[in-house]
Length: 445
Ligand SMILES: [Zn+2]
Image (cartoon, rainbow, N blue to C red; front, side, top):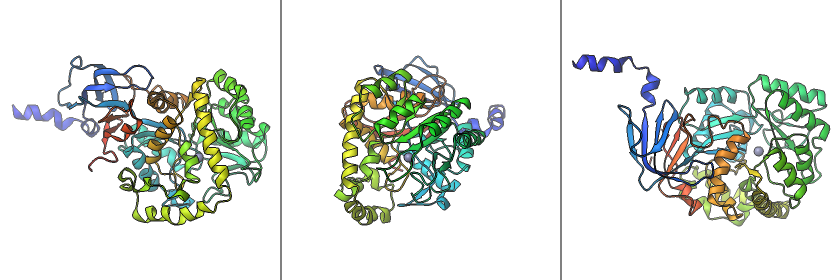
């Protein structure tokens, strides 16, 4: 008798055993669509996916499933970051030799611990990241954030940001429209799903992509089924890029207040706009000796030597930065523009530009959410920006984004409801990616 019960278990494949079914009960469910939360909800996670969402008591619990009583807790979608970078940074420096499988996996592990279940890597990548992406999405590599890499982004010869450490040779320096099209084809062949462009003369210090070049990149990207995303700074470039068919703006417009002309263009094509407010802050905040690096939610995940360098090397460098005032003004313009665009109904897609030195994956996504609320958005708008909006912008919404039956089980269980206070996003009880539980930052490990 005993043997006949045990035998089927012995024959179960390992993967099925690793992904035990989970039923989360009595939760407040915020699904990321922007609609009213569902009270006393239950979710069945099985095989890495959300199999069923229903009122508690209306789901049949499969034999052997783990049941989680989430009474008083809130379930939200995992965060999707429309603008991140992986692999290139160690401590406070950046170099191509750091870009290893181990470093990429470590970075994705940090994102995961803070509830970022998908990040992009925007154009400063080695090809090896595409293989890691496939392993994660195939379920053979678990416990880390998923990644959507743009591989090698586009600029002009010696254009921004080829001066940045480690970027020369990764950013593709295009010379003609024909050259640009060939390079987009090459990226498509290597498995990129997003094409990244830098359109920035950095206050007249670099040449930048011209409309004929970025027009060719965007057109060829669309021919190959890829999403076209751009780093930019100026309002005029934003308009030109959207006219050329751009899908996502992955920084704030910072030189001017956005106007009706840009708003009309963004609404007409439902272009995503990613504010990266923390990126702006990171360019000057360290000079002020901020208190947050001592916050355990940050400090527990960062080496002591790096924490010390924030207060010394980086602080001194930023204090004497000749662009300091420009950076501060740019941040305030970004805050105003975000509110104006959100009020106009533009698709705000959550993004931070984390990964480069001084811009810390995970912690900065939480700070970004807080800054978005400071800019005037509601917590519900922020949640929608990192679930529905970001997933649609990346065209991964069939499997990710809002919490719905059939999608990946990528979600966060929070001890407190974030709708009243966005800082409750930090109160993570558990993070799930593909139904696999990840130990969250701030929780006992
Ligand atoms: Zn970036």
